[in-house]
Length: 111
Image 1 (cartoon, rainbow, N blue to C red):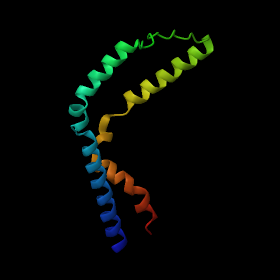
Image 2: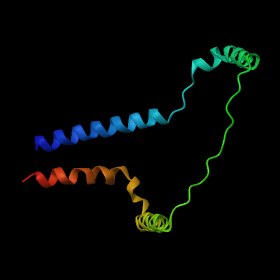
Image 3: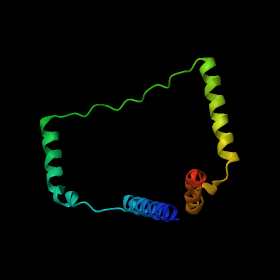
Image 4: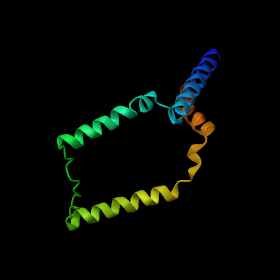
């Protein structure tokens, strides 16, 4: 029993830390660099204008044409991916279900 309970505690800790890190990553943070560098960015822009610095022109790339065999293969892949996305329901987002599924292999190892 102690193996199972220690495993549960470790998994809960891992899951909690993961969720904590994910929530921190999604938060917007303010940067102190923006306010401090406002005057320097305008000075840099003035220097670039006065020095005759020209930015390169943006050119759009031409779309490469695929040969018929590659185009057919790409269409088959797109259809296959579309079918997979349609056939699977969006129940994979349930945290409890994912947690339980991750434990299945370990539970099967226990005699």
